[in-house]
Image 1 (cartoon, rainbow over the protein chains, first blue to last red):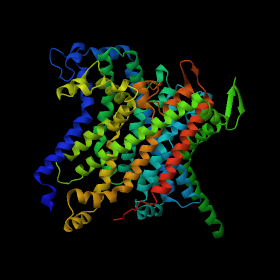
Image 2: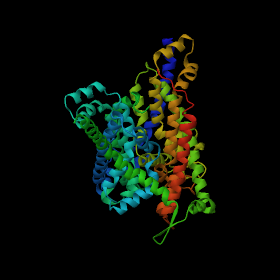
Image 3: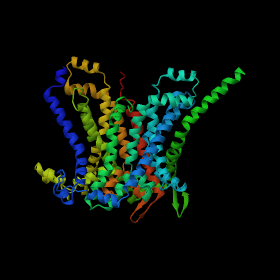
Image 4: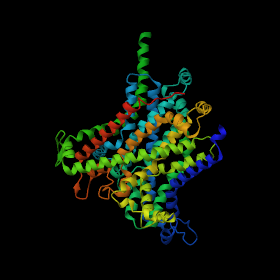
Amino acid sequence: MRAARSSLPRTIAAHAVLLTYTLIALFPVFVVVVNAFKNRRAIFNEPLALPNAETFSMIGFETVTSQGNFLLYFQNSMIVTVASLICVLLFGAMAAFALSEYRFKGNTLMGLYLALGIMIPIRLGTVAILQMMVASGLVNTLTALILVYTAQGLPLAIFILSEFMRTVSDDLKNAGRIDGLSEYKIFFRLVLPLVRPALATVAVFTMIPIWNDLWFPLILAPGESTKTVTLGAQMFIGQFVTNWNAVLAALSLAIVPVLVLYLIFSRQLIRGITSGAVK
Amino acid sequence: MAVDAEPVQRRARRWHIAVFLAPAVLVYTAIMIIPLFSTLFQSLFNTVGGQRTFVGLANFMVLFGDPRWAASFWNALWNNTWFFIIHMLVQNPIGVVLAAILSNPSLRLRGFYRTAIFIPTILSFVIVGFVWKLILSPLWGIAPNMLDAIGLRSLFAPWLGQEGAALTTLALVSVWQFVGIPMMLIYAALLSIPDEVIEAAEMDGLTGFSQFFKIQLPLILPTIGIISILTFVGNFNAFDLIYVSQGAQAGPNFSTDLLGTLLYRTFFGFQLQQGDINMGSTIATMMFLIILVGVSIYLFAIQTRLRRYQF
């Protein structure tokens, strides 16, 4: 029976299906990156050819670096993503610890309240969020984005982390209590290191939508000094729509950082999903 | 003394709970819950020259009664529904097929395929929207030339520019981007089915497709349910893909307008129309109600009927 499951024609068919879909998934990325390194004529004449000595050109990247403020945009995106991530992980883990560790009145209710945000998208409150940011003078600051993304990431983070924290052994925590550790030390020294794999999974889930978001940068921080890479690339494409070298180079620059992060964390992501973090 | 010590200690213990919960609850309440309800609340008001007046459900009457508003709202709602239908019909079956193939433990290169197929999901909408616009552009000619190579050139049309085809094309682009999510979740669900169950099925002579449909598929139905509701929520507040590929006008002739783009145009205004906070809130409220109804149907009607198996 095992042999029947892995017979040769069946294996070939499986690889054929997967390979076809992999090509479909990667083809657009390939087209962009390959053409970003070619001169204008080669982009139009042979869009699918690899760049060679004759057609190789960095003119697109030169335009991007001289015309756009991409370095600044990258810096903004980094600050926003990292700061939101730290807040989501720290606050989320603390709340998840409170919900999973202590029995108190309203525990279940609090859990449900915090889980609301998993199903109801934060975007629906945009009107009032903008008014609030205008009133508090936070429009066009990175702080506004960090606050919004922290609120957006918390519900799922708390949900996943509290599932994980229930699996941390009680004996260990009680041993810590007997040794006179305060509840804070138990959380920071004993529990937090033990749920590190879960934290990594949550980090990946939280990071990707923040880095890629267009809605809130467009509405809350469209100013030149606070543009994120996603918004910057969008604006740049709008301005240089006929300069294909520049557009393709800008797209490549926007792809690379996420791709690198993903390849670094992909094993963690897959382990997190398959170990039941989001089931 | 001994009687006193107990409550003091208990109160002290309660303080940590508050400290642990406070930051998350404060940020979440202040930035998410209060603005959400404040937005819902503002749909009951009208602002004229900075003066806010309570108008009850008048904004909703305008939305459904005024032929221009009603036409754009129903258009966006129908488009959104179609967008969702395409996702359910295309994204989920592809996800199931890919996951089923990947879950075969003797298959080589599994990690490579999994990583590669998930890559579109991590890309931003700006990249995805623009890349597909370039590929499908009749000007650049990648898509027409590829169709030419297999002798199907006549099938090519500038899909994104046609009223009839643009929305379906964008829905398929979105499916292309997000197929990794159902694939991963179903893959995880398939891996959690114990080998004994599969072996028992094989002993009974169930293999291949009949095994998949009779054993694995019923066991992963709850996961497919979760994926469906996640897709529903995601689709009914989609905005980015349409905005980056067709602009806020959701052209051609509003044929790709979704509730998200309608909300954006209403709230911020476009061209000659002024932005309108209260009508924007009204549309956000309708989106909230639609999502609420969808989530409730899932929680009360679907999830309770799906049998879950514990191994």
